Length: 444
Image (cartoon, rainbow, N blue to C red; front, side, top):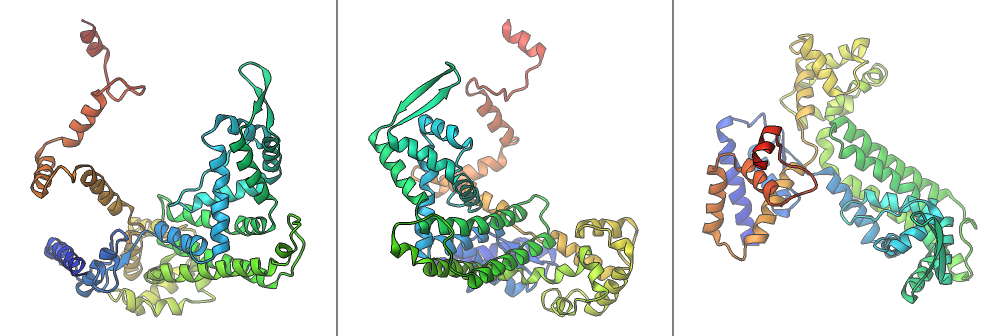
């Protein structure tokens, strides 16, 4: 614990020393690191210590990582029935992948592959859920044929049909997967997550977009929570039905109330986790004031609640003057045509209106410069970790410092490494450019 505290202090001291000469006390509006407790800790973490000196530097962590942690918490840790469901769901792509014969049998039945879900990318779960749900009947047909011990497939190379004899292990696994597709509990959760996971996939796509912006993230998070609330409400109001796959077990048929309760709990966990893990987006709410897509609504419903948050998060912006400027912008149709904050910022700059709408312009600058992901900083740490993991058993601290100095002092180090890699051996892809004259000299 003491070592962690010393590391936090050392990192904070180093950062402050590097930026001290820039006089950023009022200008530093955000800070972003990886998700380690040393960096993001609310009690003594680097971001907390930095905020003591720079109170307007709001901490930003990768929203995609936060979303992944949220889904992991809701689906694999708190609710045992849902945890078992995703464990069984992962068995479907694992069964077919890695075996050309099984893949051929799958292609014959449903003409599509089963994507494997990634442990760190919960949006991939959406593809698995949707594929299994939409291709259930084809999967039942395929697994039934495998269970019978023999499958006939067409071989395009020979132009004839071939019979595949399945081994006992494959038959046993196919029988187990077939039972899950006929299980009422499995299918209930499959229908539920077939509704939920596409919204997770859409949210992932937005927060990992190259053109990500504050207004996009804010809209996406609000829409995601609203959708989950509507799904939860429908579950609460729905009446028990016989929809789904019939089951011979009376105990399972009468457990629909328990399954519904598990799905409602999953919705509650996701909504609560979204509010908790994305609580740091409070500083993004005032930035919605300069979103031009809202200007039409300001005439009938002026956002006084968001204006009241401006002094808390951005005291460098004058609230009274900002109110006047927003009223003018909302009344002019020329500004309603702008699609996002960046286009509005460019319009004000190109038409020399930055001084006229100084507070809006300042808030727009904050909006477009606020980072929404920590992927770049995490990538640097990941690269260093790979180097140290490979060499840590053979290099002491002095050798590592020498290696770092060597990289910095060597001119064109990256080009030399790339060139050496390209010349190591013959490859299918040509990494080196060779002109006709150079090729002629090599022949001689």
